[in-house]
Amino acid sequence: MSEKTISGFSKLSKRGKIKWIVENFFKDPDAVTKELASYWHGNAAQQKVLDGFSENTISNFPMPYGVAPNMVINGNTYCVPMVIEESSVVAAASSAAKYWMHRGGFTAEVISTTKIGQVHFIWNGASEKIKTFFDDVKEALLDDVSELTASMEARGGGLKDIELLNFTAEQEGYYQIKAYFETCDSMGANFINSVLEALSKTWAKRINTHDGFDAAEQEVEIVMSILSNYTPDCIVRAAVSCPVSDLDKTLTDEEKLALAKRFETAVKIAHVDSYRATTHNKGIYNGVDAVVLATGNDFRAIEACGHTYASRTGKYKSLSHCEVKDGMFHFWLELPLAIGTVGGLTKLHPMAKRSLDMLGNPNAEELMMIIAATGLAQNFAAIKSLVTTGIQKGHMKMHLLNILSHLEASEKEAELTIAHFKERAISFSGVRTFLDNQRGNPSVKSRVQVTK
Ligand code: MEV
View (cartoon, rainbow, N blue to C red):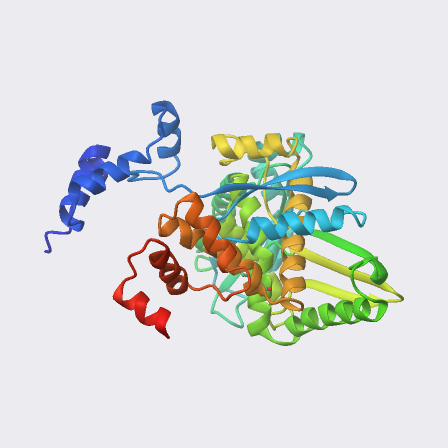
């Protein structure tokens, strides 16, 4: 066995874990030890909270926490917290928010909030027999798990329905109980999974003891019980619209219409071509994920679900739509979003709690609308710049700041570099060359580039 393997790692103290890691995986153990420790939270109690979210933690991984102000949704103004590491995303959301603030803002509505769970099982026998048995015991099954669902029911949610699905044509003996849940302001993963596990047990027990089945039919194999992250009936819609004549005051009427039409074509392309649709939807999730993360929700679940939803017709397509009709520009988005504002990390993570405070402590439906509107804002900003100036202009401007920080430029150097590159193409080597020359010590490589 390699010396780089270990057993009992999780039992080591944090310092012990770091010691083993730096000694085995780094050439500069002291520097790395210091660096890892430098990201520990200054407050030990807060660090303990963060450590509690995961396992084998040795440090924290900071991500920028930004905000997009001026997001007007259904007449309410929000300052939207966004956690994201990509330059331009928060700037784009902010500029789209401000743009639409002057054009009536975003409208949003929650269409449905149903979450799904599944008990997957194998049963060998005549399909009609299990179907009849399920129909006969359905109410009893719901009753069997009522203790677990009672408090969610008291809040207006609960286990709303169950149905038996037969997949035996595709997989021998495979059936599923599909369960429909309402989970109010929580994302509900723990609730759903607990109910499903209880449901699977009582279902198996009822099959095992049913007199109408012979010995073979009394056998059932519960394969697994788990929520589905695909929630096509947990949908929110966000939209913007304005007269084409309001799109850009600096353009002529003809140019305004051309802009609207080109925007519409760009969205249509993302309905035709899955390669473009993937990038288009990625832009939407730049906004969505950033708010999902900032509010302590599960961005992996949200992304997985969104991409399945984008493929629901059998082809992966854009999640947003655009129509230019009767002098009006309409742009909208429908998105599945199973999120919560209670439970999970939402109140435990100190920054997630702050994010929810900043948003006025929304309920889950309000947060769905805020997230969808931010996704639409992001998509609007991306398409608008793609069909006009191109994305790189704004992107590289922001990227220049990262390059400057990487090259440890002083304030004065940064000022000179920004002025120099105002009308020039930005590249890492170009900026380094410029800085090297400013610093009076052009490297060989830089000199070659300068001469070129
Ligand atoms: C970059 O993170 C996102 C975009 O590529 C989205 C798009 O192309 O629509 C700009």
